[in-house]
Length: 225
Length: 225
DNA sequence: GCATGTGAATGGATTCACAGCT
DNA sequence: AGCTGTGAATCCATTCACATGC
Image (cartoon, rainbow over all chains, first blue to last red; front, side):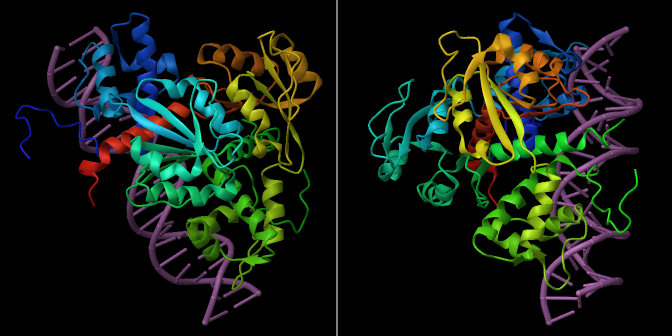
């Protein structure tokens, strides 16, 4: 119960919405770049101009982490970055499995962005005997889907990435949840249901393309001004 | 100018928001499945229950296409599907290029969901001489990035998928826009700016993982009830 | 003087609840 | 009786604008 007495507790990480979380991730990336360029201090206006963001929104978002800014000056890059890393839970490494070792699964296993600190891809799981026992280019092993639950437990896996065809997605989803997974990133074009205590995020490539198609169809005409 | 006289024009496709568009794409997928199962008629409630959606929202979304439902009955699957295909601009085929023939680009080129009717991936472009001249498993050719503008024009390309490292993303973005592309799907973890008359959609894998990480860090404690 | 942090205002999107049609 | 289509109500997110503090 006892909160440190002087501690500012604006940083009640509960209240932070999903959209805000996504932007925090963006800010972290921006700050990482700025830090690598030797920038020590940055204002919300500078960030906004540089990265096509809105300065008021940046301030509101960052205010969630506590009073980190210095009025009249801005934010210290290093300090802010540290807080973002902590808020997003990236100081520790989370283990990930990818289910489905097809084109997409394998590409994800080798994707640079996934091998950042904070995440570790420990295995791909697949049912095709031809693939089992092999490794992706970056060395991620392919294991039999039969051993799904065992791998999750023994390797302390927290996140599952579903990269199987739509037909199998629901079954896999149920299995990983039963095995205790609370974070799921789904690439299959399937409608998986929300569950209490589980975060499901969908990356649906078809929706993305169809949204572009809709735009292309409708600009020419009506979208004049 | 002359509108067909009797034509219901609730279907003013302008007013449709991006979020609604995304859901229309979901509905289309659901209907395609239902149709394949021989279902002829479906109500908003049935759709909602089956696919974890909200029935009022389904009705609001679909009302954008005109008065397609039959009160007391529901929607005719075939009719509704046809309207969705048309609204999303999927009766015609749009040509796509993928820039970057690395792991991700190649996986996308071979991804089944992209070879649906409505879309055709005509080429991947890359700067690595080793890759140029080869083909993906499904036969998409890799062409020199130097020929980017030429390919866009000659093949009548409408959509560009950016699958290059973050450092190169901005330069590629400018180039495809200059070449006349109005629809861009960006996989690079870079902040590209909005442009008038251009639809940019970002698929950011890192943001997705970090959002899961944030959730995992914060449930256990506060997210009790 | 200058940039943050934040209440107030605005703008969207979702949900409710029911009138109206079949 | 049942389901759509939709105004009204609600909820959430963004933007504005300024008091506050360096």
